[in-house]
Length: 241
Image (cartoon, rainbow, N blue to C red; front, top):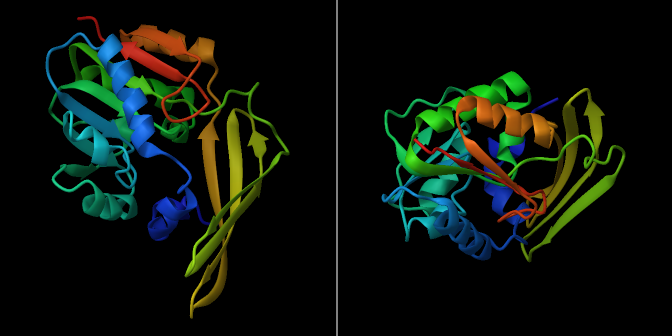
């Protein structure tokens, strides 16, 4: 079974699948969080797992932005949307950009793709090392074991004039990892209908253990109930020195 096809050779469909999201409003909420917690004076911002550049297109008006993503397919789309923003292909567990930032953001539950606690710690260490004193990391988590509903059916529908996309799945879990086998039906004008299955595996990280790791790395962390882009909450990690 293929994994994360939506982020690779099928990245052209990504923005249609998530067309219901209001990235402009999410970015406005995010900037309020940054204003509240950031203590450094600069405007250097790194978006980790930037995807197709939906946030960068708004954030670049307020910050000097750089975006990274592990998937070349997503970066190809982002280069058209977030023009002028340097984009680099990078694995968040092995981040090494030789630059420090005032803000690092990792949104829309992308952190879940590191899957394991050791990888989570590697990732947070990388964030810490790339921040200036007084800088912050804003991270939107995936579900915890308690909030992830095994066996629940889910659906999304994009109903365009020339293309229609249905996404369906039933959530599953193996140990501390959630498993989403996303079934896509794509009907395009004059091209027929195609079906593909795309597996996504995301770690189910508990809040208490995540906060403990953040403190071990050196952060002063805050767990907020509301998120800028999701209803899964937000971590704000402050590098004090």
